Length: 84
Image (cartoon, rainbow, N blue to C red; front, side, top):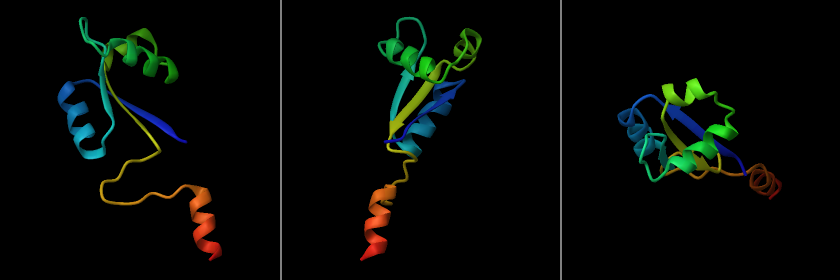
């Protein structure tokens, strides 16, 4: 399964992206209840401390690109459908 994340400078940018694509929104701001989840995302993306300060918001999702109202097939599903 593909796992993806995108980092943003403002909460407005992150929220707009989340509304369009889906996923979970995490924040690196002091007192945020999602700060630990943000740290995990930043670690996986290999962000520097400066990058974390510059882009304190993250949207993360599973399964590759999220497109509303469209079915996205895995490569195995595609193979199965073309063999029929």
